[in-house]
Length: 553
Image 1: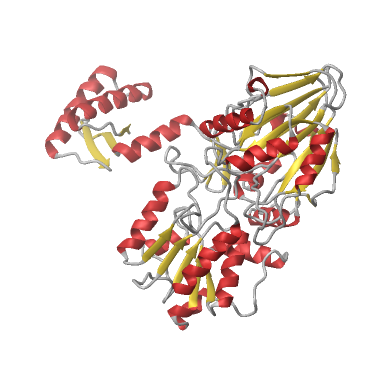
Image 2 (image 1 turned 120 degrees about the vertical axis):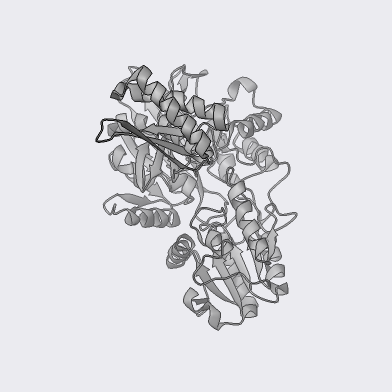
């Protein structure tokens, strides 16, 4: 029996998390597969026009008859967001998750009209079987309730997948991690540990969510006018603390933003949020309340185009106009790649004269990460004592640092594996039995990913490199359209239409003369047009210092 661990996402970015586990008989035929998480990533500036980036699941698609289920660790979009776009490609496997996680998944499935996808609610410390895998979820603390790690029992040993976690001995609305459960797994023999690397370069321990609550209390207590509070839409723990503080100081809450409104409604329906009667008011009625008695809970803390905070900062929101007396609180950290978008929102707010409070790591302020810092990362490795270690969920520099932490607690470097998306880690045991015999692990030379998957216009699609290059060129240098037509006198008429670049009359005349020479050289057959376009692109670079997208029609 061979055990394979295959990350399809989350190894070269913070996002689109998806890890495959495969038990494969020695003959190489049959066997069982499970996937842990199926999330998306927000695109950076290198992906103009793209809504979300998806993991390449072509390997799962080819082997969907052996896929026994998708197991989710929690309800954040980087772990569940790709499900509506990919689940049908995978043969509609059953999706397993805790109650809040499944509630959030079902809402996203409903949005796209997928009403027949099967889901199954799981609970911490209640094992269930998926083929050759026995899954034992264990409770972890994260900044969304109902988060779990997974102890996955395989024919070769136990694999610990931490999910997103932190150690917090006194969390705001959850229970601390049961460390004894992790010790119990270690006593059975842990073959491998896959652990979250997002904060692997940050020293110390994460500050408790209750400490964030004290800061929020102080800010709202001292605010003499309206407070606009923005955070991640699924950061239920933070939203609960805002609710408690507003109740304490007699402030009404109006919600701005569809995503955050839906997350609050789902969490409230499932009893993960406690909301006093009449605390929430309709946003349409916010102007009826004195500013000192109002808090607006707004989505868009990451500066995503079209979100409530972006429209508020641009003075384009129909119901909310920034006042100089407002206090704007950003209670979130920046997802890597979103920094510029967030700064743009802040600049818009400052231009309107309001006060901003943005201190992403407590010790300064209004956010505590849900991801473990170095001391917590070392502690979980000491507790589970794995033979093999695979850092997950992080950019390469984060995961390299995580390997250094693993070495510091006694894991040999040769037993730490730095995987990239699509690489296969294959594990063999000389005895073929659980936790016995000599373990051999190696990274296979062949990758199983190669496609760049994305969501555009609500549909999953394969990203064509050429299309992205064209979009980048248009953004950087504009478009030059060359129209060539025949007049009634059989003479060629050349028109130049430019968008996003400046071409004066003298340059336009030179372009027309160049076009005439190129037509004479290459002709006007369809096959000649790319040659004319490339030559004109070089010509324009020489004349105006830019290389726009040139189109000949």
